[in-house]
Image (cartoon, rainbow, N blue to C red; front, side, top):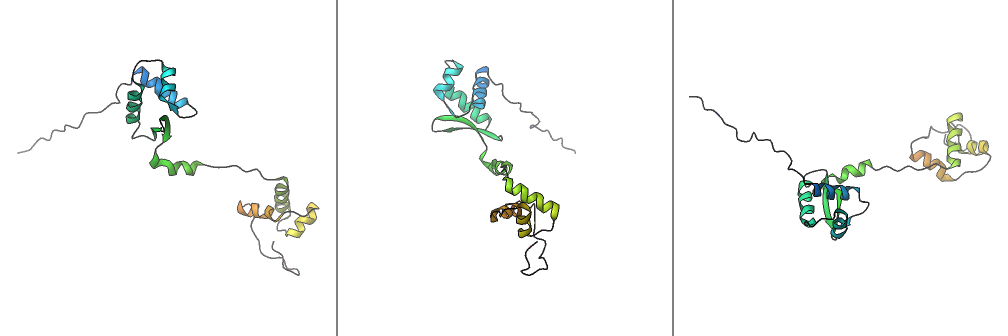
Length: 156
């Protein structure tokens, strides 16, 4: 005797229908530069409906997504989900401009490699700060290549 298994969980749940007011509130919050209080949202939407209830509905809809609607000190805004904050810190990058002396030093090293610090100063005609080479070493654009076989054995 073969038993038939009837699956009752075959129902696909579609997102609930979102009202026009909810869409407007969502758009206002998304485009806002800073968190908004309920009065500001009410003034922009111009409705008699409970904005607090609408905000709570939107907050529930976004609770399992990458961004969440949060209320901090009675002001509402979209924020990255707290469990994804580490991903955002990996995306953060800063650009730092190199000084003219650092660029000149890098050009000399590339053209005359391997070269010592004193040779760089002789070519440039001026002494340069010790942090110039440290910046290039930190960026891993240059690396020590041993020592030159002269008295004092300077680093190449």
